[in-house]
Length: 250
Image 1 (cartoon, rainbow, N blue to C red):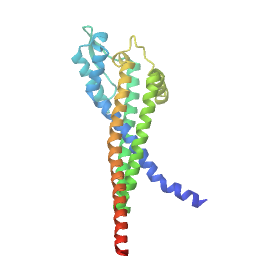
Image 2 (image 1 turned 30 degrees about the vertical axis):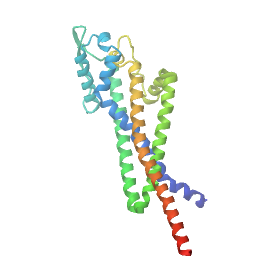
Image 3 (image 1 turned 120 degrees about the vertical axis):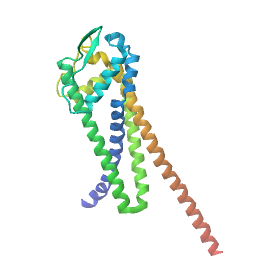
Image 4 (image 1 turned 180 degrees about the vertical axis):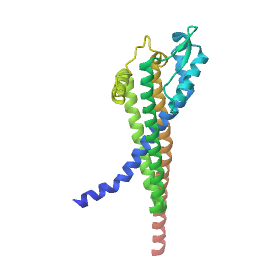
């Protein structure tokens, strides 16, 4: 029994590294999207949010900045005043404010998972080279290549699901991610969903997927290139050894 378990146990560090690469690429992409004001601005312009809400475009940018600052702070609750059709008022109601607190916790969870993934990745790489020296590079490249492949496969799967039925995917995400129903808002009256309609989240999902794939391609290309170069170099060395052996025999 132990003989059967040992090979599996030896694969655990590599499996965890593959998982860490996947989680880091996804969480880093989400983190970038959450904090990228140009993504907010793109959505405001594409979906004519200023026209629909009566909020000036510059003030929409200010709102996006305040939301970003809220996500990255300990301040509670989220209180934003806005001029809506020439009338200054509170932008969000109680349900929206509670939901945004839940969203903040979710984003902080993304930050934590990303940080832990990066810490494991760096620690594992440092330990691998300390324990095995330069020979660890080949194993590392293979694990990084696998992590990149898993990421691309996951993104493609989610992308296809989004293309087929993003509304169902979006609903499933909320049902899994939130333990209450404060996310169930009225798109006719609640400004959180007026500012950020479902179309915005579709675009944001595709943006996150694109970032993750780009990162995976960079890591995968570097790792695959290293393995290919090593393979070619190994074949060349073997050929040279064969030639040397024949020369000695002659």
